[in-house]
Amino acid sequence: MRQQNVSSFKPWRAICLSNAGKMWGSWGSSSSRQSFPIGYIDVMTSSLRYSCIYLSMYVIALTRPSFAKPLKTLAASLAVTRAMHIQSIPMWTGSSNNYAYLVRDDKTNDAVIIDPANPPEVAPVVKEQVDAGKINLTAIVNTHHHWDHAGGNKKMLAHFKDLPVIGGKDCEAVTRTPKHDETFKIGSGITVKALHTPCHTQDSICWFMEDDSEKVVFTGDTLFIGGCGRFFEGTPAEMHTALNKTLSALPNDTKVYPGHEYTKQNVKFLASVLQTEPVKKLQTFAENNEQTQGKFTIGDEKEYNVFMKLNDPTVQKATGKTDAVDVMEALREMKNSMPAPEKANL
Image (tube, rainbow, N blue to C red):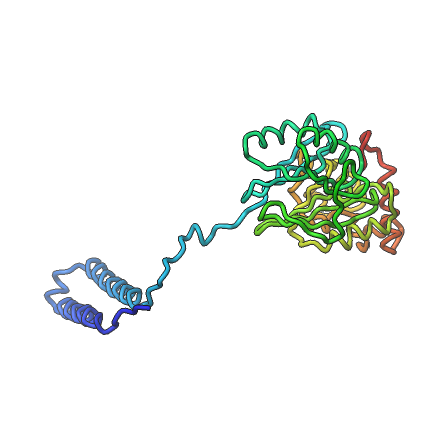
């Protein structure tokens, strides 16, 4: 490692100081005070001062050790590695308002399709990208066995041969059911973890995914923005575990991608129980946006989703219960009594 000789720059420092002395000496004479206006002297003084400073900085820079390898550019050092690309594919808009999701690893173009329940709407979107060489479809992934999530698997397999179907044990054409907390990869950049969340159905699985910069969870009908799914095959205790133990344990900045767009309806129920600032903000957002998937996080849900606020005094007062499981049961009964769109599982 080569280092510059500091002594070789001492004459420059001496010259700087010598010139400074000469200039101050000439300015200090009576004739100089008459020859130079005050403003001019100020400018000359500042210029000399900064010249000496810059020279000193130059000397310091040259005397620092040189490196065998060049430094990275600022752009490279600030770059964030991003591997995950998510495309939402709405299905049955205006009725059940489902979402399928195409998740691609940008590093390899490997991709999976989540809950492609309506192939006429999903298959053309996927096929166009496969044919263009933009993606390599590697699997169908399901959140649970209901027809509006897993009912399109066989028809999708007719378009895309020999794909594994990863999901709960009762999903159509399923070939693999990962254990709770089991992980696998999409390409080289996305890690997927299976989170078993039985209640809406006993085979419900939420899929937590992360790359180097982002964390997301696909929740099917277990967790909605501002709500949760009906307890078709489970109990209040199971939904309490799913929401307030399993999903609540995820990092707060995990973005939520639910199976349906139910936020407008859900926030009406929230507002009947809680009149807090987070609820009001969600209400405003829902009124002004048709889609809310990926816009809110697990941390946000803890702020406004009453099904995740079972210990909140206001929520307990609204239900007349204090035990967490009892509060969950009462909230679900209250929510079920509200009018809901046909075919909705909210």
